[in-house]
Image (tube, rainbow, N blue to C red; front, side, top):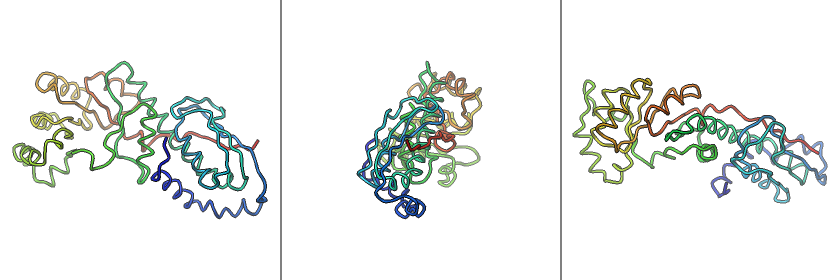
Length: 288
């Protein structure tokens, strides 16, 4: 991963949060001239992500730290496998340790979980996507981890695409007793420009809404919390009348049911758990 100025700001903020420059324990116990060698060990198997970020954490405290990663992002690692070595001033290495391992653990967790989901849909045309359910200010890193795991990124921000949800329709007074004012909605979208129409995504919560919304001919319709039976009905209807419209299944998707959903005929499956519920991968730093 390229460590640009925005990623550096995230790293610097994390180090500042931990007061890494004022590590009173390390300063009290470790002489300033002591140098050490250490290694980063994975305590469990997974998919590596964040090795360049971890390196940048140590370098941010002291450029003299020598960090060697033995695997690249996207590589598998085994339990108790050494993924990196570190050499340099003891104080700086110990003060940066937790922040570096936190990034490595956090990003590898998302990459590992994403890879599990992607393996479940192997052999189908479905693409596994993330959502905007990310930790504030860490979205770019989390979405990078999803891509490392084999998933694809949904919109990075609100500015990337028009995604119409039920609250937009309610607040904009487009719904009246369950009926959509498609004429007014289409007129408004067309006035906004063809660029927005080309990226238009509409979320629906029932087959009735689906049949109304697909008439607008959006780029994608998101089937939110549909049962498997209703997903199949929607894909058959789309195939018969609107084959150009892509379908995305969202809500309630897990490792146990994603295989069945992937065979229903949808094009995308979005999974919020990739970024909000990935279990941490355990790493430790051990001095040689």
